[in-house]
Length: 171
Length: 171
DNA sequence: GGTATGATTGTTATAGTATAACATGTCAAG
DNA sequence: CTTGACATGTTATACTATAACAATCATACC
Image 1 (tube, rainbow over the protein chains, first blue to last red):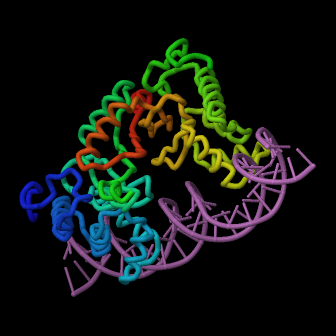
Image 2 (cartoon, rainbow over the protein chains, first blue to last red; image 1 turned 180 degrees about the vertical axis):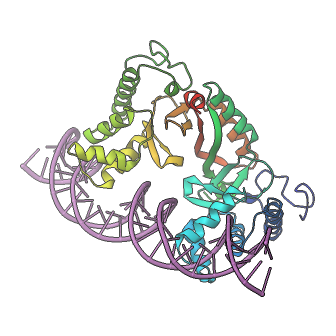
């Protein structure tokens, strides 16, 4: 691993790196190496398709549709049928290396793989950037609301649509 | 309006009525009359299709897919093409009379129309019941998380998948 | 090395969700 | 009674996702 997530990564202390100027090459190389470590640790395989899909997602802080990913895979000689993309995306999601953005029917790379997190997403409708926000307090509040009626949460979806700082200025 | 939401409705004080035994005929008649009042207030029309779609959603505390709704509409002599259902559902959602449950690609009637609320949903994977939970604290936490990076939230999706009390016992 | 085993990928086919675009009909204001 | 806005119906199509099976690859074991 390049670092322990708090040192030497400009912006990693900031809740949502994605909206701020940052060394993107660094932040995605970092996520990739963490991904490899995590998968190896679990005895699973980051095969070429899976790895390439993760790289594709890491290339941007936007969410990509399964068919967007598929198109790029096909152009590189991988299979060109939907299951090829969906299976890799599902694998990445199960391993916590990518997240599904339900509002967009799309997927985005996880920027904090390995750290336990039920993430919250900030989706800018101006530039389409998707940022992961610190969700612990949000989850806590949701747990309280659910607990009042004895409901037990297994998975949760927390997404906010709005405008990032830059796009507010533009508007 | 049958009541002001805090009096005489057994369960209306409970955060999520849906999982508890309650007078469903009452709670849905109530939501319907509130819906009519709200729409009239805005100078809009609760046409037969729209009204019927709302009634269909109110018949259960589950989320129905657009095509489920469409099937029932068609059986009653309304149009049988997707836009008929989607337009009514979109209208209801815009007016805050129904909500889209993104995890399920489905829609559910709003149980608290008129009260300002960015709702949170508890979705039971056992019995498929969907309950609206008090979301103010959740939204507040989300606002804080977003505010840390200057992101302005316009709409949000908060959904939890899990098990309701009854289904926990069953499992 | 050979081979059984399970995981992964490729492919075909189809299911499920949603919207664009245009024609027709309805209603209320003038 | 006509105009204009809104609502509905219809055709066609786009987008998203999965089931089912075949072929391939990797690994562990003999």
